[in-house]
Length: 423
Image (tube, rainbow, N blue to C red; front, side):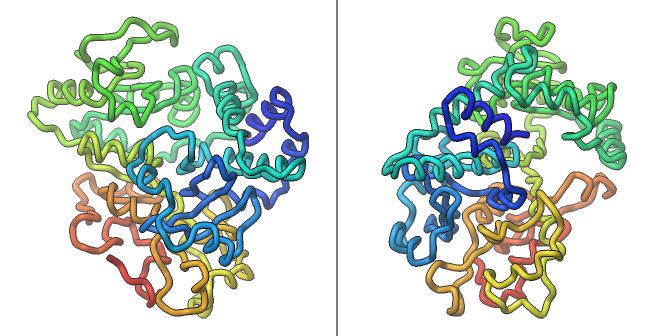
């Protein structure tokens, strides 16, 4: 749906090739979290923890190892410094790190393919059209105005796109509240869309689960901005009202910043430094900023941990990644499959050294997990039945890069892959 809503706009409004509207079933294999789009070159990159390029594609077409080495060498990618500092906006690159964004990666890649067919490009300028497509479909008024293809479709067929919350998770939320915890929901979605989602997922009484609901939070800015730059606003009929000077009581708010929210939490708990545990599924919008700017504990919800359970039979352990395709049937289905084109989210081999030993390295995405998350879990369901005082092992508890994965580290990081050496 996300792909279609962007593609329809590019074709109808910007004159792109109609071929973009049809999707081959296997083309979604291109979608892999952690890819960086080099906007000017039309290239997608998978980065190692030291910023070197592990795999690359031009549009959707994979580059051979030799080509990767010729184009990028074994040195740090030119924008790695700013990417790894999680600097938000850049005209040079875009980081795809959540499932909501990923279909846009496939569309951009196919747009590059299409532009190449019509005339060979050196520099690409499709990005401004992509941004316009995102604006058109997701702007604040789009839900109310039935603008674009995305919101009208989710409104009409929520059952097709949304999964109801498991009872175990609802029970867990209630237990947390009964134990005196303050529960917050912080989302960058606008209030009307948030309400539709929560009513379907949690039920019409969803507001009873949370003490504070913040919509249109515009993360990661929510964490990095000051109260002056990003004040809280109240809502009336889903319309944002005047800016508030301070946040005085629990309730439903729009926009805002973590600084004033934390002041309210101090007031509500009666503690000088209340501990906040923040759950999120985007490294860039949730985990990094909550850790870096607010020093909150962070729980990274990483669905890739699910895809790891049944990968390949043990006897093929020693085979290079490229050869594992024939066991594809053993893998769980979307979105937890391991992309054939991009390989593991966690590890990869250095290009050009596929057949030598000691060439497995962690991806940059994998390094970020142990650097910025307190723990990482596949779903909330994975921890919902644990006692509330269960003690998790943190990533920071020892020098291991795998300590914080619950219930277990991804297979790619386990010692049976002998050549993996962890820093």
